[in-house]
Image (cartoon, helix red, strand yellow):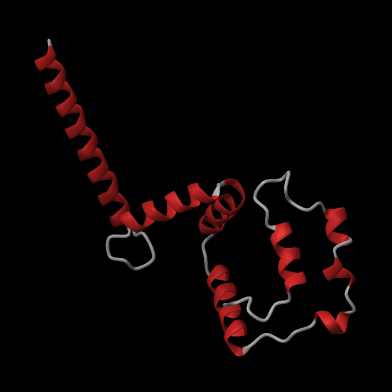
Length: 135
């Protein structure tokens, strides 16, 4: 929806630059030769809709208010994880965001660690019980 008014040439340019696999990603030299950058300035200027402008400002404000640690985590996730790893990280986040606030408090993190620790201990006991009955 955000990119509904963006030209297909511009979308192609962005998609090629955002390729996760460096082998598939467009090089800087190729980017400079891309048709979108070669377009006359007036043709490449399509004004944002009110919704797009508001959403863009919201995203920029949100990023500006993140802590340095959050920014590092976002950068690592954006550049270092595969799409399936990002999906797994989102699922894990949703599991430990107990109050569904969109943030994980220190208390929620401690609760998740405690639950994980309990689960590991129970699994260890179950394995040791199962092992002793096999002997």
